[in-house]
Length: 452
Image 1 (cartoon, rainbow, N blue to C red):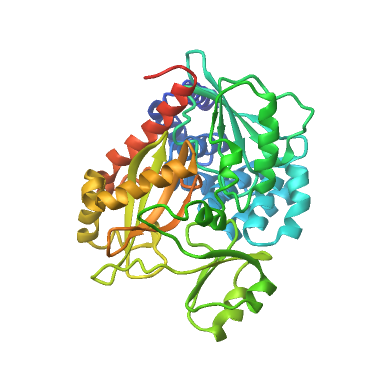
Image 2: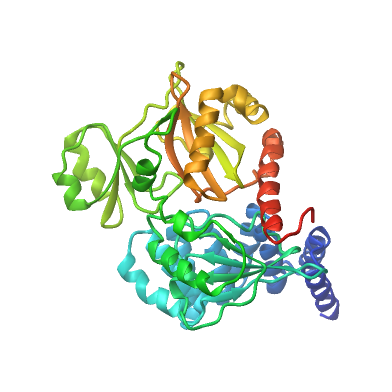
């Protein structure tokens, strides 16, 4: 037992000092001696999760729950991972099991509130929001650096709709205090910071959070990345109005309507229906005929629905294409190209892993974006960046027959995620890393530092 305790302490010390590979090896050495060791499984899972090794994290968390089914925190960890993978029903089961074991566990209430909300059950979520976040609006995350940290105040919503800041706010440089904006007490002082990063990104879903964040910033003397008042203008319907008239940009008609108004509206078919606040293709339906409208509405959660005019993103070969370009501090960074036979194009559900020709086309885009898109589309993207006024944003679009940008969306919700370890995706890594580096350097520049 002394040997196990010593190994655990060594793993934790290495983990705390940011020596990830050595920490991982120490946790695995301990688990080779005791495969059911709870603290090692949780420590290994947490390390894997924060460093983007989701499959490894899942394995560790599942083993922890299997070996220790009565441990509430282990179930919360697994629930958090499942939630991040949009496996909402399975995540909810883990949070509910945790609350049966520990009814006052705030983290379980937080996770269950998010999950119920994502499943469209806002009424059931409300008491869990209160139990999970009331009095817990500020959470200081751990710092693993050896030098004095750069202090970041991170404004977040408790709901879906935050940009993925973890990928560029590393815990060896930045000491992050997250502020859950819906639960900010207007009389509670906010901690001193060197820079504010507003990660609240979905204007359609997070209006209250953005309003509260804007009021909170009146008490903060620090540079701000993504001012909430600018993000507030990037709802899907609002964006089409703001970008109207930009040369080279083709915009869809977008209306946000109640369910009753949708059924009473005069619609042109086909039409797209989307639940407010969801991304990655969730709760997003194409309706071809009027007689199919009621069934499509019944599949969507929430009382408000986005009614969107579809843009034809098919190329001459009949394939649908969706480009993504990030806007970081006014510069354009190509992130990916998704190609699909289906109208609902999403990178991780597309056919990119199936066809080397698709990957070659994406590689050309990543290597020379202006040449692939053409001057008209590149100028249009620059115009979009200027009109949005955001420090960090993304644009999803296709290219029309005349070289115009067919805009799907432009907002701050888009995260920059490195692909998994499969060598198939090695060609993507340099472009993604450039975008991550640009986001990190932007934060450093706002504090007067650079090159760390």
